[in-house]
Image 1 (cartoon, each protein chain N blue to C red):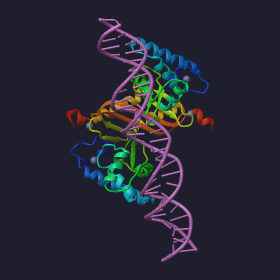
Image 2 (tube, rainbow over the protein chains, first blue to last red):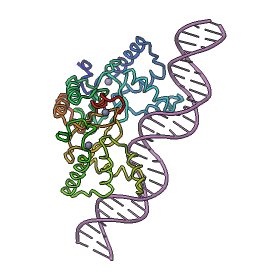
Image 3 (cartoon, rainbow over the protein chains, first blue to last red):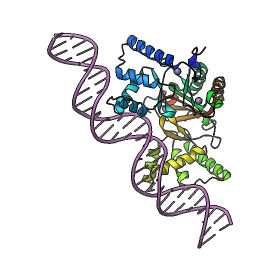
Image 4 (cartoon, rainbow over the protein chains, first blue to last red):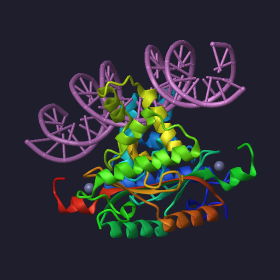
Length: 166
Length: 166
DNA sequence: GATGTTACGTTATAATATAACAATATAGCA
DNA sequence: TGCTATATTGTTATATTATAACGTAACATC
Ligand SMILES: [Zn+2]
Ligand SMILES: [Zn+2]
Ligand SMILES: [Zn+2]
Ligand SMILES: [Zn+2]
């Protein structure tokens, strides 16, 4: 039971991450094919780099990796790919980190909550309907129409609490 | 009933904002006196500028206002004041806007949620224990120790829904 | 008043993101 | 096929937000 319901757990050190990557890329390819979207080589590669691990990664980190691969790349190169991936729900932006992470449920454009470990840098994506309903209730009381939610919780994950130096 | 329980409402156009300002500044002065903190002229002025309205304001906006007042100011000037005000719970940073807004319950270092109107730019600060408890429950399930919460909801406030052009 | 500490001034630079326009690739069609 | 409109990427410059580093001034305590 290493990979079942992984999207509701904090990524563990021993999980089969290659499965995460191939699954995410496959889902992205399927989704884009289905939606008539062009997952170009660049966009595919950026998505792959983002999925290298579960740590949100900065735009300029990605940019550096692209240039090290020999590709001609400038800030707009990476930001345009990020925009495409964001617009189509394939990645999330972690506002509190100015960083980007792969989405566990691509294409849904769903609300998500993130728990981010300050020790190992990993982020867990949750989709807790309860949080959404409480926010919706507050919004209703205020007469407020919700457009975008940002729920990001920083702290220390269970794994890092056990290990002093991750 | 214009100003009662204002902290749980979206700031209305007709509310007596001068009361907000004087109350906030008075509370800040009292708090700093009580805690042995130095609310210097600069810090006091920055706090006052932030409380000019209920719209989160950017650091460089504040900086420009200071320089227009004839004060010698550079980015560190304003960021150091912001740091002081943040550390002592007198203001909040709105991560999704890179902007700063006065705190309704200064000194408590409490968790807060923000509802931010994309039309008028105003932000309402809530302190919904329910949201906190749901987050705490998720954290417990994950074995996650919460350090910092960011809950920011963007959308359209009731007032702006009624008026097409605020 | 000497001394240690805190706050502020000043210059430079880091980190993140976008504007504007040119070149290229792709898709749809004559 | 070749032509044309559109989408994508390349390129250069710049905007926006934030911090590093170091010096000076104010303040407090003795
Ligand atoms: Zn994984
Ligand atoms: Zn961790
Ligand atoms: Zn007010
Ligand atoms: Zn509004």
